[in-house]
Length: 169
Image (cartoon, rainbow, N blue to C red; front, side, top):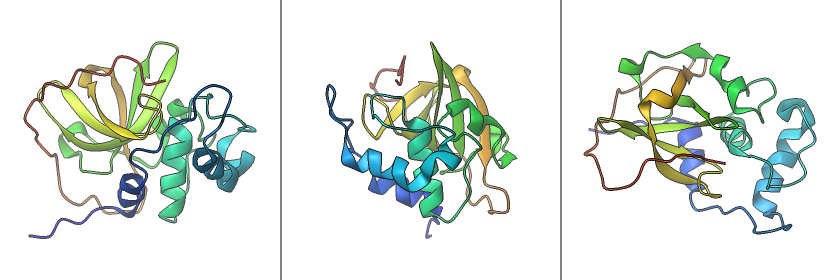
C-alpha cells in the first residue's frame, strides 16, 4: 500500500533540522522563507529569526505546495481559522494543528499521535525544525487546506520516552 503524503508535508520534511542562528545572527534559510513570503502574507516586516517563526515555517511549506497562507501567517493563532475544520478523529498526516502555550501560540503539522500527545513537525521547536510531542489538551484547532482531499487517517504511535514539549518558542 502506498501512502500519499500532502505536498506541504513533503516540503516540511525537507526542512527538518534547520536551525535558528544563535545570538544576534540570523539563519539565511529562515530569513529566505520570510523574504519569499513577504510582508503581505506574514502581516509584518520579519527581520530576525529570534522572532517566533513557527507560522513562517508553516506558511513557507504551504507556499511551496502552491497553497494560500493564513492571514497574518506569522501569528500561530491565525492558523486556527485557516482552511476547513478537521475533527480530531479524522486527523491525517499534514493536518495543521494550533496550540496554546505560555506567551502565545504554536502551529505545526500532525505526523502522528500517542495516547497523550500529538507528534508535530514544526518550526521553532527547540529553535529548529523538528518533530516534538505536544500534549493533546493544548491543541485548540485542527485545520486542513480548503479543496484538498483528506487522505488517510490518524497515525497511532507507541508512547515514546520523549518528553512532552512545554514551550515551543
